[in-house]
Length: 244
Image (cartoon, rainbow, N blue to C red; front, side, top):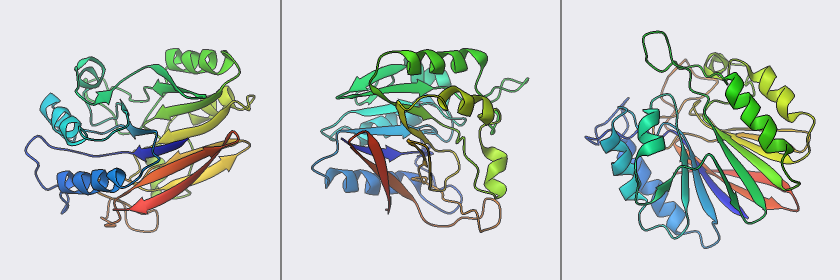
């Protein structure tokens, strides 16, 4: 199986430039690259499809993917309005809490925390309910599992760690005892990382829009937008990061 992993599209309904880059143009380049692959089985987008939180920006992104021959599964990020992701009827995008492709089971996890004023926080957290869902998902059956979530659970040793999953140890405890989880795919940091812990590959996709770097100043534009392509053979994942 081959999976295209994108994240952090940050599309505005106006197609405006943000932070000196043009996210919609970057997205079209990423899609053109995906069209050149003959062996992609599915695409996953791990959140922040929208930059402005509007349904119209999600629909604009959805339309851009219309001609891809493989399915595109999405989850919500902290810039998205979750209701737009969960309830909008898209032409190409699919939101499924749990789904299966070939021999792999996938779960879409919500790591977005809401502040007291009703806005989404930048840093992520897993509720007790979501942790329970993950435990039940892992326990069910003997098939290999992949977890999709916006906020990363692994550290980079840099300023980026301010932005990751707050209760990551509780998440790690959920998956530590099972060899069935072969990958955890996330985004949010706008910086590609991969780390194998046991049999599981923890993989953060670069952003399709703005890009950061752990060795640059916080939020300094690195100008390295990209995507990941994961290959699964004999129950193990490998990843290649590709700039667009």
